[in-house]
Length: 227
Image 1 (spheres, one colour):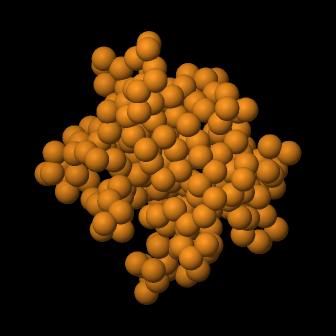
Image 2 (image 1 turned 180 degrees about the vertical axis):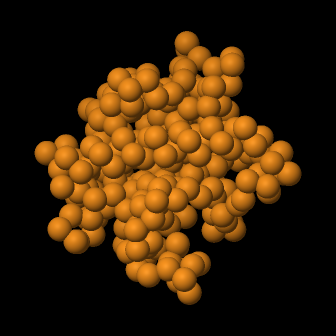
């Protein structure tokens, strides 16, 4: 295997058949030794977190596969904490798309003059650039198109896919009496026809969820999802 990229929480390798292998680490993002899935640096290492992330990611990708949602997923090995995926081309240096069902977190920091904490939102979708240096700034459709990151047609496809995928995950969590507040997804262009598909992982660190009115820590959320 050849190393393609060494990330904060996972490494990426190329396989002989041209596919990629993602190796999940026990390193998690945070600051000053405190776990924070939204942080831009590794804060600590939690034993077993890599396997937990791949287990939940496999769970959701298998569901999306049955529903014929386009993804880069091929298969996963929980014991090895690895996932085999199709190679994908990023939009620019990476785009994250967030779907929000409740007004919390950075939404409130930006729009708190008008929004109330935990106000219901109708699957509000926002795009942010993966840019640690600039704290992952939000970006509009016009800016994305003008900067050549994607086309208006691709923007619509990404937005529609984000709502579809997020609603599927929201429904799965609801089966366990867990309420999804928001979720962060990542997409890329896959295959010779550049099909837009979901990439990366889907785990507790990608979402904010509550049960009985109480926030669920990401690693605990992973456990609850697989109960």
